[in-house]
Length: 121
Image (cartoon, rainbow, N blue to C red; front, side, top):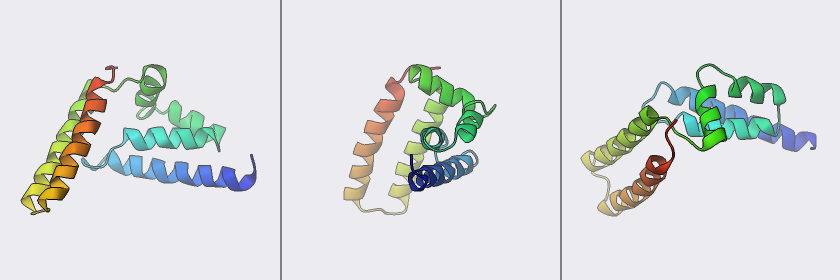
């Protein structure tokens, strides 16, 4: 792989990791999807960062569950669905136009269905 592509994958991985790290502290920003994306990018750019993240004591178990079984921990499922409900409530309270709220409902229902139908770790 040429150096430019490797640099792009590494940059995308670092950005994803940063967003995932921030998401560990902010309730409405997801952690796991960004960490999965970071692992995907690191697999194409840096064996050292890929192995570090897969074996990380905090982030590694969720990544390994997903890689091995497509599983999401029950606690994470609850947090994800509650976060989606919070987004809808905030949208309604701040007066987002109804057509936008309807789009959010349709999209978030699809995402919630996907999350809730994954095996539990």
